[in-house]
Length: 99
Image 1 (cartoon, rainbow, N blue to C red):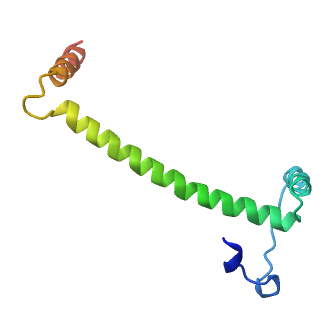
Image 2 (cartoon, one colour; image 1 turned 135 degrees about the horizontal axis):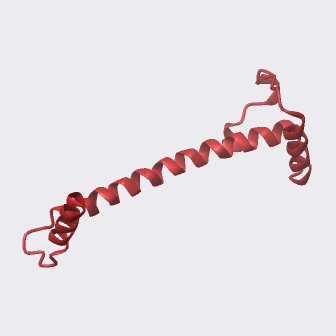
Image 3 (cartoon, rainbow, N blue to C red; image 1 turned 30 degrees about the vertical axis):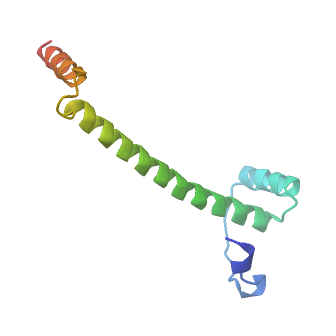
């Protein structure tokens, strides 16, 4: 979240969180390295993970589109393709199916 959209801390409802002691200790260490409070470290990491999930979903969608395009090209290439690759793939798959 950008700084311009941040609410004042006094308006944010407290949220209790249970952490294993080892996880809390690691977060405290990282918070110190990053010059943040434990709360700020947890919030920053949660925001980053949510942002990266969105980015990963976009990348997966793009890869799926590329795979669909490639699949359609090799399985049903345009007429006059001349490569014969699609036929070789079909023949290979048919041979393997018989084995």
